[in-house]
Image (cartoon, rainbow, N blue to C red; front, side, top):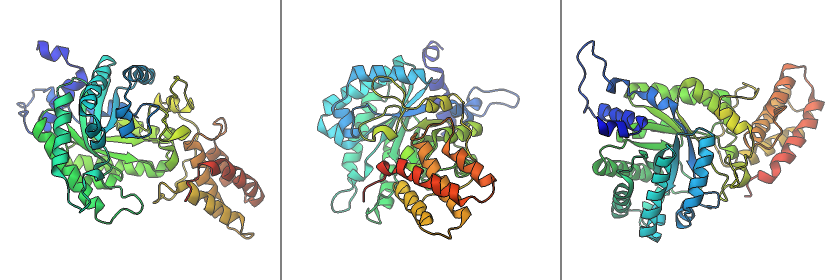
Length: 416
């Protein structure tokens, strides 16, 4: 009992949840309420998390090679201002191999800093494609070496709440070989199995890029997790409905471990509002504004100032007045801005252009502007478009509006 009293409440609940999932908790007699019976998916709905890297980091390897304990302490105070209770932090094989002793020391420092700030820690294995050798074979030795080190370093740290065995193994970057997704799925399973073997207490998840792909890897995890970078309320809501329905079938909890990505037109406020309404825990992308992404990602600059107060406001349930209009999902997430600009310019170049098509082009641009926080939010662009949609056909107003939106977005267009 004394041991249980010294553990964080969420640690106890999650430990009981894992025992329940693995069949280690006996079913109580009829009429008897069990603490373990409360360790259901709803326990994870209270998660308020953020993905985290230091502000100066250009990537995961750079973050660990230049890890700074005082910056971590400072950044966790920023997390406290947002009342966050979880952080999701990436590791990779390259950062371990570069300096194993420093990596171990820094990982422990992060875990203990999280514990001091009463923040749970999810460790996510990124860059899993590096486990594929040049000849296409999977390097199982490298996988086991990294996982053993992770478990040895922080497997017993009180702050550790989840292992994420692979970040988006289902996402094939442009130009990647066709068989890479299948091999990354296999790698994710290998990592998850090794984590289960070496750490029998900490729940394992796999954060997939597409919610539907949770079904492929569900048997390998204790907790389901997906990422939602969809551009509008209807698409986000549909994602959540499907995720919860599948979670219900499996009897496993579900989380969203990445939402709020401005380069992909995924608005923080709408995404957070829909997840809160659905009682699904979340991790925003991301706590700090880093060198990797620049001013279009994250909440805090290194000095603690906030990029846009609308983001923390949304995290506390204060949402802007936005349109509910459904738009088609964007299959090429990284090229969203370029495609939206091209679509708008095509409409502008057609003297007999269709009014509804122009509104849809404007709505896509407006979502991008808001999600990237590139427009003043007293009068959100989506609201402007929504008012046009409600009124009579007015091509002249639309032809005046579209070039303004395009001009604001053009500096953020990916160069081909």
